[in-house]
Length: 150
Image (cartoon, rainbow, N blue to C red; front, side, top):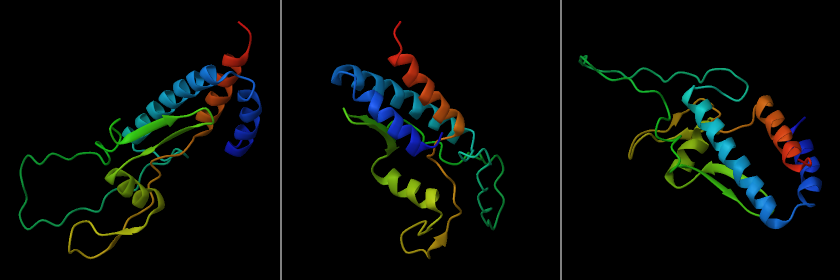
């Protein structure tokens, strides 16, 4: 099931719910969706399952001993940057503030300046946000479970 087909299918079902029940369901879905996006970013994977393209190695004149190598986007996946919002009509999970600019550049593989006064650098596409087939199936099942009589 594609995202658009899921949206059309879910809209008719969600219209039957009362606003408070709809908002409660969408909040739970948004929380779980944000959690799965965070886990996928931590695992350094695109939604299709492929690994992120590695960083270019930095050129150093001298080697530093004991240098700590960090994964990409460790702070970007924190809840203070990866925001979720819900309303009676839908939900969204995305980045806010300065983090949204960084995420947009990496999501689409655009040119950006790494620092003030530096030349623009082409960044490879690393899809931070996106739905996997498993997440689409999970959303479908969660909606059916919530709407089925207990």
